[in-house]
Structures are given as C-alpha cells and as structure tokens.
Image (cartoon, rainbow, N blue to C red; front, side, top):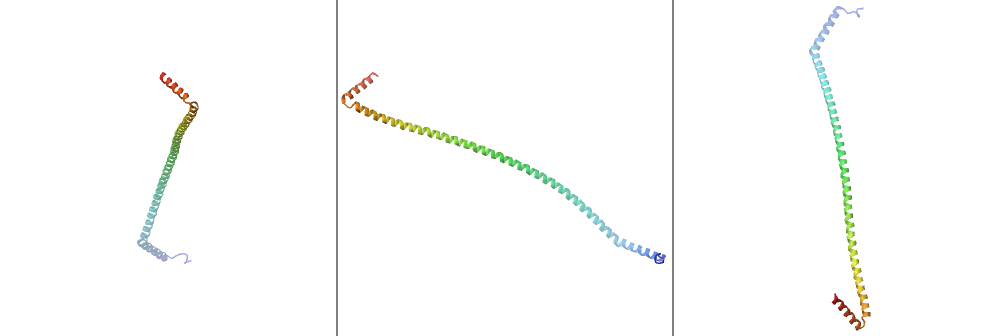
Length: 164
C-alpha cells in the first residue's frame, strides 16, 4: 500500500517542486500569458466595437440609400409627369398649328375660287359682249342694208339726243 499512500518526504518534495514551478511560472510565464489574454480581450472588444460601429454605419448607409432611392423615384415621377405635360402641350400646339394652317389653306382656296369665278365671269361677259356685238352687227347689216334706213336711224338718235 505504499504506492497508494505517499510518504511525508515525497509530499514535501512534491510541494516544494510544485511551489518552484509556480514561482517560475509566475515570474516568467503568467505575466506574458495574462498580457496576451488581456490584449486578446481588448482586441476582441475593439473588434466587437468596430463591428457594432460598422453595423450602425451600414444601417445609416442603408437608410441614406433608401432616402436616395425614394428621392430618385420622386424625381423620376416628376420628370415623367413633366414629359407627359410637355407631350400634351406639343400635341395641342401641333393640332392648333395644323388647324390654323388648314384655315389658311381654306381661305386661300376661297380667294382662288373667287378670283377664278371673277375671271370666268369676265370671260363670259366679254364673250357675251362680243356675241352681242356680232349679233347686233348682223341685225344692223340686215336692217340697215339700204341707205334710207340708215338715214332714218341717225335722225331718230339725233332727235333723242337733243331732247335729253
């Protein structure tokens, strides 16, 4: 049973060697280990802080992006509305110009028709006058074929002139 229960000397040397190991570890190993653990803890805390800051920044950027998108959509709607209004104005203006041009063309056609009517009437009058003169000439030649008839006609016209 000696192996199971340690001897007092063995306990002493075990305690002494454990204490020496603890002192050596405390003097040379604990400070660097604790410093590295502290640095690691600080770096983890900084990383968490940076991650939180980045998350907040991302949320802010996301909100800014959404605001920009809303503004862009509103601007797009405004531009589209203005384009629709301009299109309507252009169409109405084109209709108005076409209507005015049609009125001008109709008025020009009316003037041309009146001018043509006047020319046709002048030509008809000239033809009627020419035909009347020819007919009168033929009638006068038949009636005034002899000189006594001519003399009577001249005297009649002279008497009519003197009376007036």
